[in-house]
Image 1: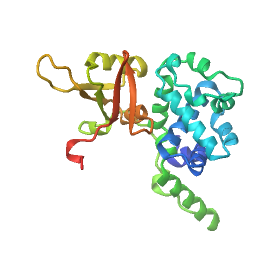
Image 2 (image 1 turned 180 degrees about the vertical axis):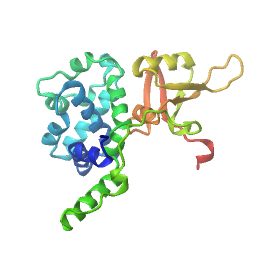
Image 3 (image 1 turned 30 degrees about the horizontal axis):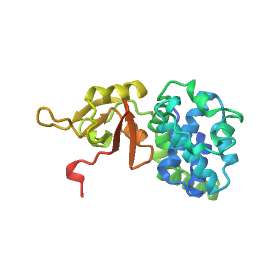
Image 4 (image 1 turned 90 degrees about the vertical axis):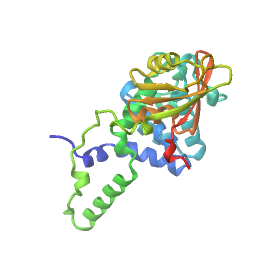
Amino acid sequence: MEPTVRDVLAYHRIDRAAYELLLSLGAARPPARNAVALLMWLHRRAGVDAVDRARRVLHTPADAARLVSEARAVLHGAGAASLDMRCFAGAEETLISSILGGGVDVRRFFALIPDGSPRRGVAEVLDGVGALVFDDRLYALLRRHEEEGECGGGGALLPTELAAPYRRPLAPATIGDDGCRSLFVTFSKGFPLTRDEIEEYFTERWGDCLEKVMMEKTPAGEPPTYGRIVFRHAVMATAVLGGERLVKLVVNGRQLWARKYVPRQLQP
């Protein structure tokens, strides 16, 4: 029997509670969502109940900011060798280390994992159960149903939306909606990148995630200064940004700046 949307929401109450805890401690929604999604992936990968452990060590806004910062460092590092560990400076032990069981060298742990795996894992979570876990409207609907059930002796009719079978989305986004799957990228002046370099960078780190890469059309001999990357799934574009408006990636020693692509007709 297929699980219902309600079943999935109920099963992931702890994940949702951790997300709401981060929000209550001042974390912004996208970074909080990515941090919890990373913990959910670590649960699968390391066999550790990372989300529940995180809830036990998050007490202050500083704790929340620290976890979000560590998660961002993991998701925006291009592999363990270049992982940005500046946010860990001065800390005897990172929050992620304590969540994994204490005494764990975060850099060493992620060095044992193929490059891009955390980001791909987070993208899979967000594209799967995360679509329900981080849906404020669905959880509000569930809570209202449960409250009505308690007041009415447990006989409240389950709303159609919650009774619907849960099916993980498998197909890529439909044709014509590539704007939501796109990033607009620019290059540093005098240090352009080629289409092949961009495709190789993303494919090596995150697998077969690209649909196409488009470059600025320039006169012969002039290098492009910007381009557009279209992913197979919208969640991949979201994961690359990691809740940031603008991110810097380093491709073959040259900088690539990426931000959400806004179709011309939607620009103010």
